[in-house]
Amino acid sequence: MPNDPVFRLARAVVFAAVCTALAVAGHAVASHGPVPSAAVGAGLAGLTVVAAVLAGTERSLGTILAGLLGGQFMLHVLFAAAQHGQHLTHHAGVHGSHGAPAMTLAHVAAAVVSAWWLRRGERAVWRLARRAAAAAVRPLRALLATPAPPPPAPYRRHAATGSAARPPDRGLRHVLTRRGPPAPCPASG
Image (tube, rainbow, N blue to C red; front, side, top):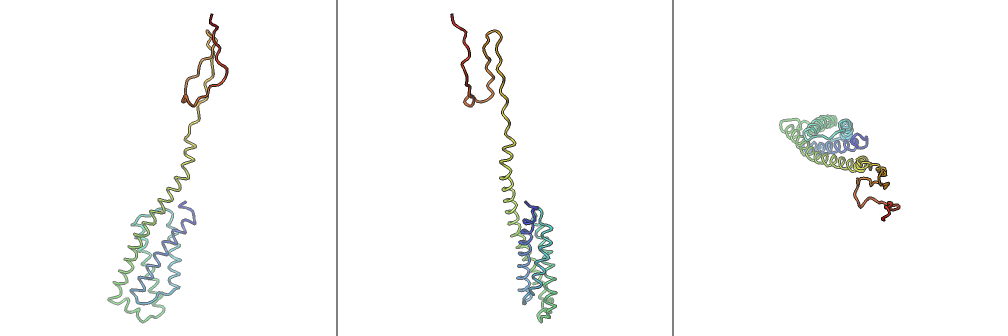
């Protein structure tokens, strides 16, 4: 299931959407201006592609946080360039002495919060995937693990009495069914 393209794409879209939404919110608050929608779309598409490539296995909190910090940095550069391209008057203040620490703090805080949130979701999704796989495999394992019953022992006649010897009890007595004519008895005399 983890290598299924639909599963990988779904995980990538969730990761990219969370990362982009938090970056847009943090960037807009810190820069006091809107982020151009073209930059948001480009950032979402770029993160989705990168996340889809990396979405094949379960990721740790550190890996998710590193990915989010890298994504936040990339989105910050993209959003700042897009805002600068629009010649916003407040852009010079953003990169002045007061705006840069606030912008960095906003992006780092967004990465930390979203990494914690995504790791919880990651753990839940993988736990669900493992349980679903175990539930699907359990009947097959039970079928393959059931030993075949032993073949019945052949009846042998004793040479001295001519009567049939009883086969050894290999199963439970209440499971065995013994039918047929009674064994011949020697005539009492």
